[in-house]
Image (cartoon, rainbow, N blue to C red; front, side, top):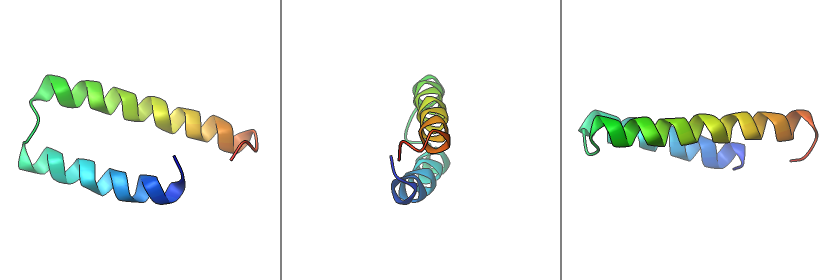
Length: 50
């Protein structure tokens, strides 16, 4: 994901959380996936991959 995509995705996820569309377990799984994406992006950025 590019920084632009993250800037779009993060507020969208916050909006979903505020609206309570997803039950907590689903959001936890989603949040874990996002954290994994962020760490992957950080590694790629540090390595000059992006």
